[in-house]
Each structure stands twice: as structure tokens, then as C-alpha cells.
Image (tube, rainbow, N blue to C red; front, side):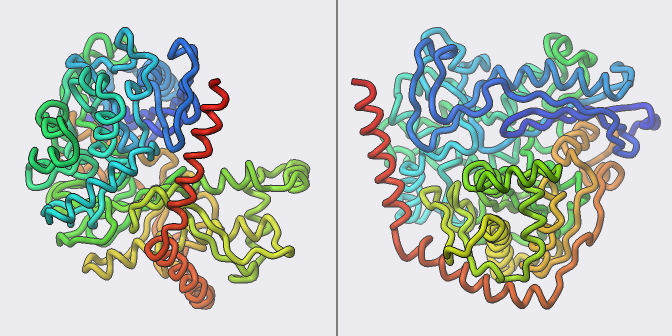
Length: 566
């Protein structure tokens, strides 16, 4: 172990949904010394593939979400040097770099790592681009995978709560094969973006154990067998062998060393350690010092990912997976999640708030979020008479169905914007309670909820979560949780610490029990939660009305676009 960690630094880079963020961290104590941020120039492509990329504008079907891999390289060229400059350190003292990424975000590549959208003749093919985690257009493929797995009683299905998601790599890969087999055939590797960016840094392709185990359906050292895959579609039997199978790297291990080209991009020393990739949610747990059993970390942003470690392996309904060493070595790592949280609040403020509220907020020097939060905080629990379902981006856990949609019940002519806003805040808390209950009912104890992400700044939202779940809420002591977590892994890869838990103890930070449940409010929320649970089970299990509405929408959109093309 190094003896001069006070003068050693690491860089963590967090690749989010809309931007990448780099942070320079001191190895000895986790002090964050400088930050750089770079927004992806192309953001998320959801409606069209623009003409400047494809040559001609290409409309995208509903539920698509693509990104451009060059935007990720720009983060390395812009955000990393900016962070080092802001830190005011000698770049020569940086000993390692690590990254985290949204998941499941998939990059189709050639054998040398070139993304297919950068291959001549493929820039106009949507399937050649990165499929972001929120690409939900493979639900039909996910349904077929789930149904066949149930019929065959595949042993791996229980490790994913009985359902795999349309967000994951097998469903997305099957969609590509069926919708654009020519592009599928040109693809040599189906790569998690978490591993692709590491490949760009060190020139070596290593699959990280985290995404392989969760999103890649890899259990007990193997993926679904070729016989199973062959029954899904002709030619899919070779998917694992030809596109997916690759060397697995443990979290905190060294994937390789920084190449000369990546050193020029970043301004960091050539040859420093590059850590195996990781997922934004999982890498945050060490940053919050949440590496022990019973500590659930909710990384709250556009969506929420719930991760925790446990000493026992159990099959939890609707979980996104349980993986041996999926967060830290020696414990079983669990993941669950909600597909829409901050996105829902943002949608409401952008599309459902009267102009008078916007004007009043501006006059008060508040954002619309702050204004609605202040108004909603004055209410008693249940005063608005509403209950909502937080499925505007579908349901990840525990129903694993992205054909579901949002709902607000109880609207009257007396309902005001702050009422609906508070109901949406509460709905996301109810969704987290469903997840916590599923874990507990399955024999996986949850004793503490630790919040990371920008939404932790909303005190009303945090108190609602404490009251609804009846759990003490701790808050990560960093505004850059994923980037700090990545930096912790970089320190381990560089040899500054022997393992991730040891590094987390020195470099992580958390404020314990910032929000405590209030029994009076918790009791009032119990009644609302009963209504939420009833709606959850009815619309999520008993009726297909939401799915049918999605189908009607897709057909209408297709008719309109066909008419416009004539």
C-alpha cells in the first residue's frame, strides 16, 4: 500500500443521461478538489435521428432513446482537463482513473471498438447507435424472453425477480436482430457503455462483473444457453458466443493502463491505472460508505436505482438482479429501481403548471420546483385527496413492465398544481416502499435508506420518503456520489488501498439519519399507501388497459408519420 497518499490523486468520471462529470479526489481522505462537467452535444435522441448525423432526418418510433458515442469521448477531452485545472494539482500526481455509466446502455461495435454509427454506410441506421438505458422499445422482445424462460423453468430467471427488463442487453440485442439484421451482422461486440469507455481509455475490452451479472443475465459463470436463445429467433443462438462473451473483470481491478491517445485527451499521465468499469448506482454505495448488509442506497435522479448488499441470497420479486460481489466482494449485491422519478417531476413542471405559477415563482426568485415544493409543504398528509402511480416511464421494480404509464386519481375542480406535484412526490416514495417491502418479505433485511443524487436537496421529498418507508434517511456527503465512487475504485485499482470497503471507509462520506420518520405522518401515509397498492395491483396486474393505450398510441403515431411521408 502506498505511504504517500496525501500527495496522490485519482479521477472519477460519471457518465450520466445528459452529461459527463469528472472529479479529482485526494486518495488519502476522499477530498474532492475539482470538478468538470460536459453536456452531451446530442443529448438523447428520442424523436428523430438528425440529418447532420444520418444525412437525412430519420424519425424514430415511440419508446426509442439513442445516444452518440463521440459525445462520451468529448467528456474525456473536456471535463477531465477542466477538473484537473479546477483542482490546481500537478497532473503527474494522478495515479488512476475510473468511470461509471448509466445501465443498461449498449454500444454496438466492430472488433476494434469502433461504434457502428461511425462505420461507413451505417450512420443513417438507428440500430447502429447507442441504445440508452431508457430505450424501452424492446418490450415485446423482453416479454418473449420472459415467457420462454418461464415455460422452460430457466434457473436464472429467479435471480432477476422472475422478469428481465426491456432495458437490458438481451432484449435490445434481439430487437436489433429482428428489426435490422444487416446491422446486427456487422456487429462484432455488443458492449455496455461502461466497458466501452474503459476500452477507449486503455485499449483493452474487459466486461465488468456488475453489468454482466445484472443486465447481462450472467449467473454462476454462464449466460442463457444457445438452445434457449435459438427458440427466440433464428440466428440468435450465437448471440452470446459471437457478440457478448468476453473476459470479466472484478470491480476495483485494473482493466489496463492509460494509452498515449487517452493521455492526450485527458492531460493525465500515460500508463496510470484504469479501473474496470462500473454502474453509476452500484459505484455510489462505497461513496456513501454503504458497503454493509441492510444499507439500501437510493440513487435518485431522472430515475432511481436501489442497491444494497446482504449476506444471504434470496429471490426478490421484481428485482433487477442479485450478483455475488455485485457491489463489493464477499457479499451478495442486489439491485432494484424506478424508471421515472426526477423525470416525472420535471415533466410536470414543464408541461402541466399554469403560467401564473411560473410568473409567481420568478417574482419570488424561486424555480418552479422550489415554488411548488414550498406550497406543497404547507399541506397535511392527504389534504390534496389524490394518489398517483409513478409509471410515466414504465415500472422497473417490482412489475418490470415498461408498457405501464402514469396515473393520478382523485382530481376535482378544486385540485391545484401543488396538489398534483405533492401527489407525484409521494407516488415515488410509495414505489420505493413497494421495493423495500419486497426485499423484507423475501428475507433480505432493509434497516437504513441512504439517499444520493441531486433530489436529496429537496427536504420535503426526503421527509416524505422517511415517513412513507418508516426508515431513517441518511444522505451521502457528496454532491458527486457516482464520480466519488468511481474515484474510490480508481484508488483501489492504483494500489492505494487493498479493497473497496477499506477505501470507502477513508474516502467515502455520509450524513447519518438526517431525516427521521414521524409516526403521526407515517400513520396517515399508511392509508394513502393502501390506495396506491390497490391501484398498483389493479393496473399493473389485473388489467391490460395501460398496455392497450400504448398500443393505440403507437398505431396512431405510425399512421401520422406515414401520412406525412406521402
